Length: 179
Image (cartoon, rainbow, N blue to C red; front, side, top):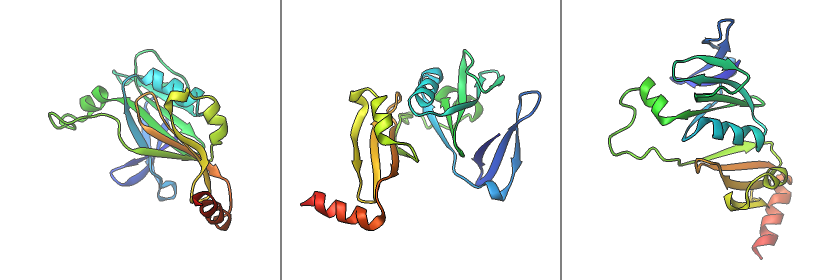
């Protein structure tokens, strides 16, 4: 079971016995679900699983064959879970096959944006990253979170963060660092 946002309605993706995903909608399951376009689904799954601790919910090949809880050769889409959060990794080609016309000719489908993953220890994650991928941190931000910013294999900017201080302690810490 994994959550997703489809046409503004929170949905739960249920993998039934024939391994085909089906949807069940519930307002109690409202959440945002991100899909990242990646160059190599298997490489990206390995990164999110091995470095950040995500679990594989399922992978799907170009013929929509689904394998639950594992990685399959030839995967063009993978859904991962971290706690209640879900993340889909998918090739741009597979998206354009499912949604013809989704890319404007000449439009760059390159990675952009920032994804923040709350509740991960930035210091532990930084030990598992190549130094050249780290952009900033681990350090305490103005908001009291200890944060680490880095690029994943497809150049998306990822921030992992955990509470470092209370709000008043964070403000005092930020003022002290500014001096």
